[in-house]
Length: 111
Image (cartoon, rainbow, N blue to C red; front, top):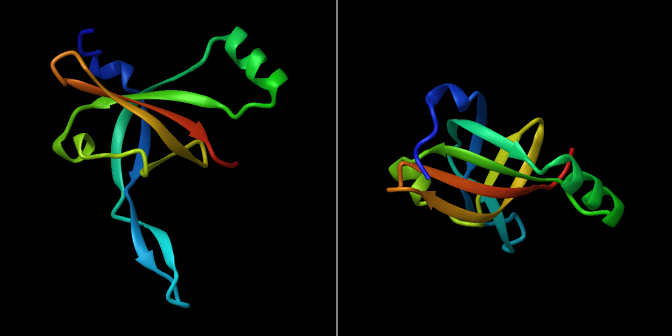
């Protein structure tokens, strides 16, 4: 699959590395690392997919396609994406073509 045109990456998203930290009571918690902003092409499922998810009570899923960078190639499924005022939990990460782009599939965590 070839790299998409820059103009198709028309949404700004913010990636948050999630790191293990220690809470005030000495318990392990997940904390945000330094945010990484990127221009993305965001695709939601088809209308049929959205209707089926709504009937099943499923969460909203989207695919975020961004330009591959060293920082984003280091992303893991623990990271989160902020988009449309919500956090999205990354479910899968796939390099595209000769790793020119990366696709992140994520599920909306809240509103």
